[in-house]
Amino acid sequence: MTSATTMAMALEAVHRERLMRLAREVSFEAGARLFEEGCRADRFWIIRTGTIALDLHVPGRRSTVIETLGHGELIGWSWHFAPYVWHLGAEAMSPVRAWEFDAEAVRALCAEDAAFGQAIAVWVGRVVAQRLHASRVRLLDLYAPYGSGALT
Image 1 (cartoon, helix red, strand yellow):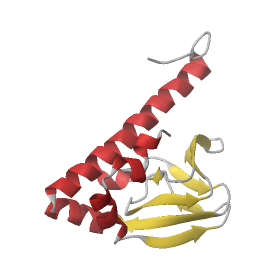
Image 2 (cartoon, helix red, strand yellow; image 1 turned 180 degrees about the horizontal axis):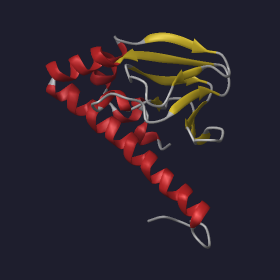
Image 3 (cartoon, one colour; image 1 turned 60 degrees about the horizontal axis):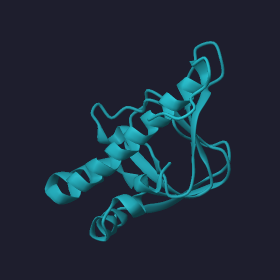
Image 4 (cartoon, helix red, strand yellow; image 1 turned 135 degrees about the vertical axis):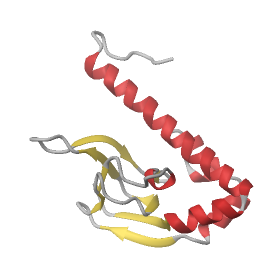
């Protein structure tokens, strides 16, 4: 993920500080599931240390890892968009330390402060756009006759 999508780069200090007032430190052991596809998206995380794999359920097969995320990256964006349901699953690939945020509390702050809400929306939108771009590149690698090369 590019640095423009990490909280530290995407949010101004005033917005980061406001968001971090809602942060709660959590940790996960390797193999712990953070969330499952189809379940309610009621929180999100920013990774401090460790690695998280985002995976997709494939009927009749093991879940497929879609992307691996690390330090500074946002885990989960479905909390920001109704109907607030996870579209993927997430599993700790190593011991993970993270900041956890209650989605409802963050959405309430977004509703009460338009500038904060816009900053969060732009940040989450950038994350979604970057992950969509990365998914397209992976699809080209899998299915294009000569691989992706470079996607413009």
